Amino acid sequence: MKKWLVLLAVLLVAAVLGLWLIGRDNAEQPATPATPQTPDVLETPETLTTAPFTGMQEDGPYDRRAVMAVINNHPAARPQTGLVEADMVFEIIAEHNITRFLALYQSQFPVAIGPVRSARDYFVELATAYDAFFVAHGYSPEAQQFLESGVIDHVNGMQYDGTLFKRSVDRVAPHNSYISYDNVELAMQMTDASPNYRIKAPYAFSAAGSNDKLGEQAAFIEVTYGGDPLFASAYTYDAETQLYGRSSGGVDTVDKDTSQRIEVANVLVMEMAHETIDAKGRQEIDLVSGGQALLFREGSVQKINWRAEDGMLVPVGNDGPVELMQGKTWVHIIPELPGIDQAVQYSP
Image 1 (spheres, rainbow, N blue to C red):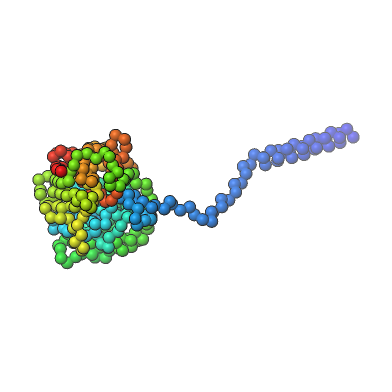
Image 2 (image 1 turned 90 degrees about the vertical axis):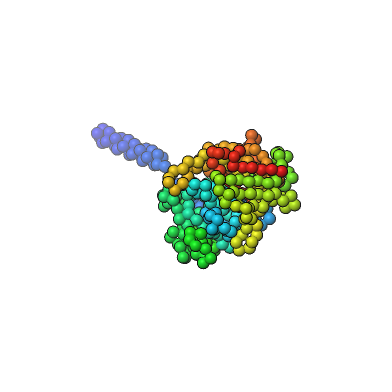
């Protein structure tokens, strides 16, 4: 009898212990997370009512992705098409003292752009910084490596000559390659590139007459690259329009299709280190270290500096960003040797 009671007691203890162990194991299992719920309405980016690269507020919203195109500046390529609509134009040496334009479009887009010319690696760097869809026809070996690595959404006339890019019959190659903005949009679709503006531009703007830090009068400006007068740019200030009319090689810079003269609210000159890297005169340019700059607006000049903010080139003073006048800007990137004092002349 006693043996039976002992056996019963052992069985009861084992049953209680088993139930306790099962309960402990269940308690230690992590809870199964709830399945996330997809929101009914997707979050949309803030609507831009101010153009990020001009400060204007007339024709918004400004929600389309920027396009940056390499435009030929050889005398045989003048006058060009599509510069009037550019928010900003960067004029940079492509080889020796020959310059090209990087035209940045975001608030307005032209019907056609050109003549389109070949890329340099620092062109690709700038376009990447501005999150722009990049348009070029050809490339240097360094630029080709960048483009083929997939660092930027782009279209190139080397792959689409005669299709997306068209050759004009009134000029000879390589000064006759053009692309329509419709074909730029088609290229964006073909490459699955986002069509939306996605960055925060670091520029500050103010209206005419609101900047109390303007310096001495400078109604006439000349910027030179080496000794070739064909690549000397001149600007004349019109007090009535408060804009600078541009000329190059002694000839007004106008649109080929409309004959409209290029007029800008700001002329920026930025000094950067340049190094010639091959026998063709191609350059390596320091786009990140900052340096001296001049800002011309409202017929006056400010001696300032520039710095790179997320790769974008920004005019700055002791108190931070320097305000551009609302409107379009032409940016000259010049070698630090001979530098601003030699390359830029201005007078009242």
